[in-house]
Image 1 (cartoon, rainbow, N blue to C red):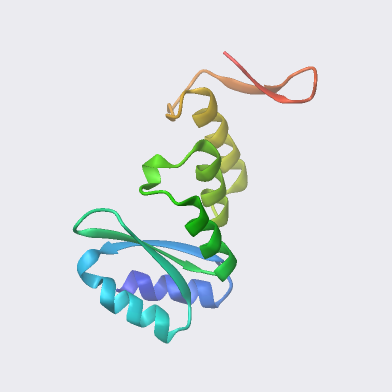
Image 2 (image 1 turned 90 degrees about the vertical axis):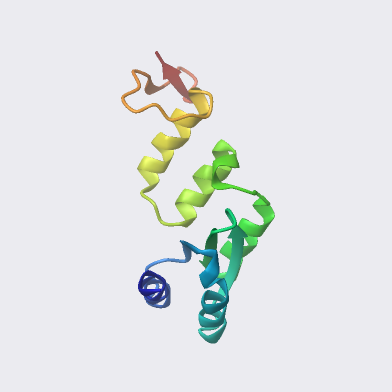
Length: 129
């Protein structure tokens, strides 16, 4: 619960607009109570019988998460993965790199891939092998 408290502090200080906190399912009631007490919007996704993902933050961000309607982080489309990473505050340039790697490698990210991204003649982004 210490990590949850830290995440709540970061949200309250404006360092994050959306937080993804993974926790034991047995802590769900305590987490919901804490977020309700702090008046923070949240959405809980069951990962397994023993684990949950708790998304919390700005109501607009929570609305986007709910609209995505995914059952697992591994089921996100390339675009949803990019949007979620950006909303969580991950480095935008690295999110762009991740998106392109996922998009042009069939959904998996290959570390050390020999593919390079370069602009095409039309100005659109292309991948060069």
